[in-house]
Image (cartoon, rainbow, N blue to C red; front, side):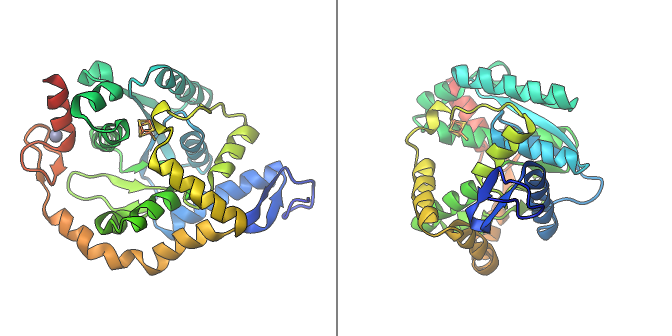
Length: 301
Ligand code: Q46
Ligand code: ZN
């Protein structure tokens, strides 16, 4: 197979584009896809200070790399989740990347700063680990952005992630989630803007990006991901994609173009119910403590 752009031998083929690319043209393609997502959705404006949520995995490191290459003022934020060896190794990858690019990496270590780790929080609250983890991440990313004067939090959700989340939300008709499943959520009182610049790239592409640019990333999945619903939805969509390349992108982008606005009212209604958390002041729909402060309090008990 030859590169679609320059006709040199291809190193990767992308079936949904029906195209192969050589190394340099592929890396350019990745940057163009990110640039296009950013422009199409007005994710960034000139002068924005961006905080990239960095896990040490392929997606977040590829995102940080592309944003830096595009000249975006982007620092990283790594959250120590206290998930054993997985956390040790992923933190090391994030630090090593930041050092090679001489980029700023902010670290928040949940066990030392809040007195719990994700497995412990899950056990104490009888939640599944990913639920305790997800709410902690959302809270702490937002808080770090506000504290650090950042305009935007950028996350490494890629096309496969977004299509799988959409699939799960459609299966259960979680209409309030569907209204919020957008590549950009504007800033609001107490919330930094949230953007997902990788929506036009699949995870095979972000992995190839890292391999071809020599970025070392943690290959192992978090041990808590094994057997979770999200991976099941991804596998189901991968089967469909293998039969019919382009289905995943058609599903997700079709939703954004033709259906997402239909759920906006429900999402706006949720926003109207926000009050300030009595513990930390963050906006929440709970009376009393926000979900994160309630989690901290419960684990302390
Ligand atoms: S890190 Fe956290 Fe993921 Fe691990 S505990 Fe679940 S949510 S699987 S992206
Ligand atoms: Zn709170």
